[in-house]
Image (cartoon, rainbow, N blue to C red; front, side):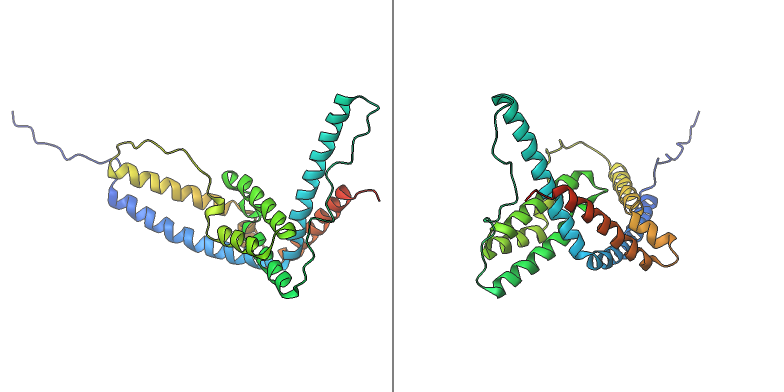
Length: 237
């Protein structure tokens, strides 16, 4: 009996997968451009507040850590032990800048780097959020106590993109066909697009009649946030 061989039906046609990938790539690029442009406008509008918030947040963490260490020290030595004051913002760590132009350049580099790597930009990327917090902490320290050359080097390191790259274990290569790779690429693009569309700024862009009105909401948020942080970090004279 002569049996004709039926054509096999691929689970996913490579050309269809590639078409979906190309379409998603274009959409992702367009959405990213719109969101990035809008976020840049917002960051420029509240640049001073963003930087002040990050500095005060770091100071608050340092003070909490110092208080915890002080309590532990007192507990170990006895209730009557009077421990020295914990970590306070030093008035002597920041060198006096004799060159106004150098100080101006340090401030410019610091602001550029801080706005580029501020943790708020990575609120939806957990794997980068901790790194961004660590980088901004180091940036503040270099700005306050380092020299211009050190700040220039760290500024270049941040903008090279290497500062936010976490070391990850190498994955063992696995055999896969072309379709499997395309499906993985498609899933990655879908995930990226969902992440971008999940940003609050994207929702503002797509739901507000006048997205630019959000600038004032953001300003009010930072004003309130800074007032609370200043109250928390206020030290007794």
